[in-house]
Image (cartoon, chains in turn cyan, purple):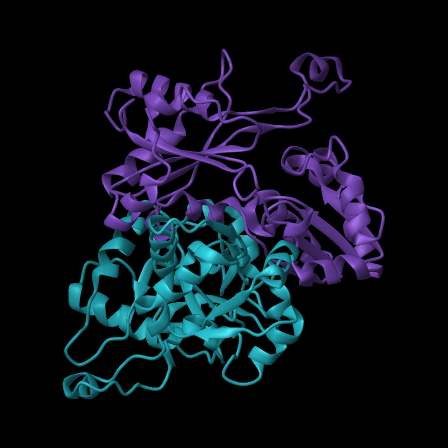
Length: 274
Length: 274
């Protein structure tokens, strides 16, 4: 059996009792490092805190392992109980759906333990969850690669008066282009996109496309470290939020659509004070 | 301090460790019965199971209390630690945002403990969360009240190729119309909408509006008891799903938009076998 256990957003105590029951009875436990590295601070002493809580060893599965070598984990799960821990909810990332599909094709039974993820905890920002349109991802622009497919999606949602959740790029264990050319992988340092960079890129695309989908006066909500004790939420225009230091990762951004009464009252708690 | 603690979807062991820490240190603990009555089986012995786990008494706050008498709870929270337990995530329902707003206006500090809710756990059905449009609610039709505002929203999402999550009506502690006229409230028995009824109503509205937004051949996914051990997920056309007995509450329905490769492979596990 493969148990895919969502860990939630904040720290090691955001696991559910049911999740903890599973982890403790597994023969082997992996944790996905792709995003957890940043949110749970595994780089420092986060892993030992988890191991202490679970009472067992936890193997960090880095991005390569999850994307390229998941079969080893799945083969183990054919014959024993294996736990695969992921930050947020198991179905927050396409990668995890891929693992579920491969597991079932191999005849591995899968049990999912749900938890909070950005996709529902974002309700904390005050805008009602049922009034969001399609979620967009904002990738880091490079000199030669500046994809703007998010622009069309934001446009569609704004025409309907809906809010847009923008997920901001996370780059962990990305091989450098030079190293790929030489055939031996060397990795870039981890990077995460700040709300400030996201707004810069959004406004750059608006300037280039010129369809007035949004502007620097558009109301947004910036959210850092959602669900953790140091969570920071600020509502304001793109121009205002661009100047704010939101601190440590992870960051995300909501572009507000039309706001109802209750939403306005919730946002009032988070509005920028000038 | 008011702790609003999400309980997740399945049973009492879906609370997080952080949530349990809060509950155990609170001076008084309320649980919202509006939806929990159905999902956690509080009508039978669910409450004592919760009390045993938490090691303290839990007061059931019915719908009237939450909507009309929340001030009492908030006053208590001004001077002591009060826990308010809700099924799913605290920001899954507008009612809870309302309580947060009132709390802050009264000067009550609020801490939210997130958990899974239908809004993110629905990812289990195989359709990617970031490809959903606006969420719709399907209310029980009566002879004189057949609101169809969901039709326009589904139309907008389908034109963009997006999936639509349909939340189905739950009626708990609704006063009967007769009793309201007489000035003394008598309540209807609790009712929850099945997937079958939802599809009947959807097709009735399509027949009346005639804009070919969907048809009985449209691919949907029916989900019952999401996140619990008895969870049932079936993918098929509206016509097919209408004939299936999904069993106990709660039910919800997803109308699929355009499906990508991975989504198709996930749905294959849930397709109706004929």
